[in-house]
Length: 146
Image 1 (tube, rainbow, N blue to C red):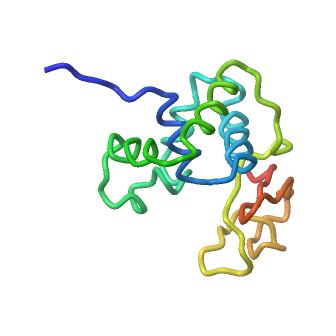
Image 2: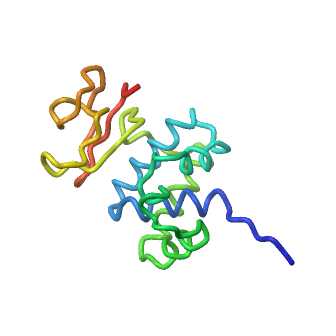
């Protein structure tokens, strides 16, 4: 039996596609991934698959779907090619940091029940040290979270 692994580029592209539909948002999320990986594209896969980091890849939100099923779902989306271009640019070191140094992001559409504790107090969290770098659509991007 031939084992076919899922490429790092497919995993990262899937994350972008499933986390955001807007091009500017996907670009900023790719910047978060790149910033967490310290600019090393060989670490992207681990960053994206780290437990509890990206909701589209979390066990508790994918409801038992395999990574193969998640990637297949993402590939069916109309923004796959746009996201793939963003990932390829990042892997080639050609990504401008439109997130302004963000290492985290989350959905923010006003006070909500699922506001992360690690976010800025103005967003309902308790982290006095973090800084909001940007807002794109319903996402807010932050740095100095840890």
